[in-house]
Picture: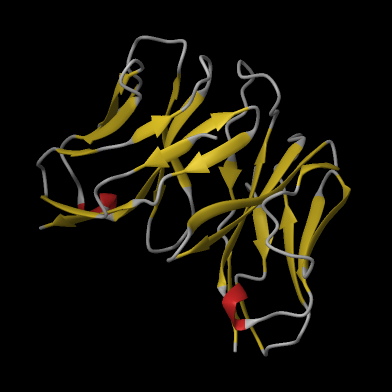
Length: 118
Length: 112
């Protein structure tokens, strides 16, 4: 398996522009997670989906952020409008399950997208 | 809410030596998972080792092992025979019902 695939690897944009980050989870995994990593705040969970349904988006910083999962093999994280403080590395992760603590629900991370908002 | 604390922002070790990274966490849960993730300069997050809280035996993966002290809520990572490729950020993580809490990370440098 190719693992979790994120695109693009790097994104440079100007303040006010719309940014869309993409993620393809591991085939067969039914949970997907979006994280943001910054030097100041470390690694933060933004939102996670189970069976394509958003379960918890309490980590989404504000209304400028939105995430979708139209099908089991694709998810997007959109920032509109982007701001310089959104600059960070955004990780996507997927796992086989998430509810039962006894499930094999290890999260596998993608390589991340480095976003720079100028 | 669960919190994860890594009290060592940076550590260094000589190649072939042993180093231990500390992690403590706070939870009222009884069953949960603990993880150590490695993030090399490539930025990709790599799972190093995992521990189920209901297991008393410490997890081991080749040169990596943990010292899991459930009562003390401590989960340290020991790296034996350190290699240059071990240079990375190491994150301790707590997981319950799909939600993960990460520590701030420890930057480990292995010196030749």
